[in-house]
Structures are given as C-alpha cells and as structure tokens.
Image 1 (tube, rainbow, N blue to C red):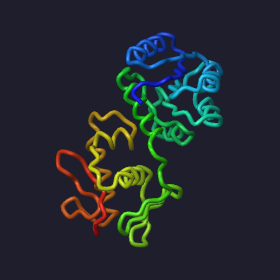
Image 2 (cartoon, rainbow, N blue to C red; image 1 turned 90 degrees about the vertical axis):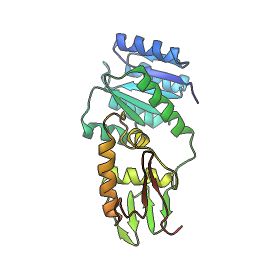
Image 3 (cartoon, one colour; image 1 turned 60 degrees about the vertical axis):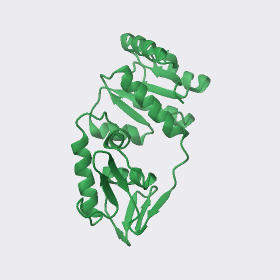
Length: 229
C-alpha cells in the first residue's frame, strides 16, 4: 500500500497543518485531531490505516491514549515525540507502538515510516519460533539456544538475530537493520550495527573472519544461514 488513511493526533496547530498538507501532497488521506478523545473517536469511527500520535496532548498524555487505542484496535501507531530517552521509547514500544519518530522530523521521514509500518502490517504473521541449523529462536520467550545452550542475548541482540532469522538466506542491508531493528534514521548508525553484530557473533561462537551463521556480503549487508546447508 503506497497511500493510506491517516489519523493525525497532534495538538500543535502549526505542526498539524504542515503535516496534513505534506501527507496529502504524497497522496494520503488525513484526518487531524488536536485532543486525545477526539483522536480516539477517529480511530473507532473512521478506522484509519495508520495513527500518528503526538505524546504532548492537552487533555491526556499520549502514552495513555496509546494504551486506550491498543485496547480497542490493532491499527499501526507511530508515536511522534520530543522525548529521546531510550527507556521511555522502549516503554512506548512495549505498550504497543509500532514505530516512533523523535521531533523534529521531516515529512519524508514520516512518510517512509508510514510505508514501513504498512508493509509490516500486511506481511504474513510471524512464526512463534525459528530453527536454523542448531540455533533455535523463540519469539515468545525471547530466548535463543545454540546446540542446547542458551545464548543470553540482550534485547537488541535478540531483535537483531530474530530479524535476520526471519529473512534467512537473504542479505539484509545495514540501512534496513537500523530502520527496522533500531527504529532510527540511518545516518551515522552503521558503526552501531557493526558492534552489535560483533557481540552476536561472539555469542554464536564465530568471528567475521570465520563465520558460521552470520555472513557479511561486503558493501551490501549481512545474512543468516544454516551452516550445515
């Protein structure tokens, strides 16, 4: 889906008007609300494809509105926030946000995030567990086990491994990893990906020079493979 119906819940009139205009120029249909309860009514009655939710609303904190939306609708929600604290962002994602943008952001960034959440929403349901060779990854328990031994992955290490396992045998670019695993714009983040891949390789008992599961394709990205295939 390249265009969408979007419920924009944003109390700042200037930002709201600019985003409505920019999204409409990109072909989207937008209904805007300045207050939480007005936005919730839009979700219930209009049933948009995507919700863009500002946290600083005058009648209710956006995180509480997120919880209310998630209780009544599976609609993808992109949180727009000036809060850049990692713990707060993790809390919002755990509460049901599908993505987030830290203010200020451009209309092009928002449009890209909208297209990304729509792709994820239309994709086939994720499996509960994936097995690659002697590696077993369980999404429900968030555990990865290699040859019977738990790997003890951090949250980001698990998310990175799960994302690659879902695309087993396919080369994934660092840009995609930053956007889909870290949920951040790409600029300057390739070093972060390299570091986490190095940590993940160490726990898998391999190195970049002698890979088993994680194979780097120079200048393209990385892929997860079955070493015995």
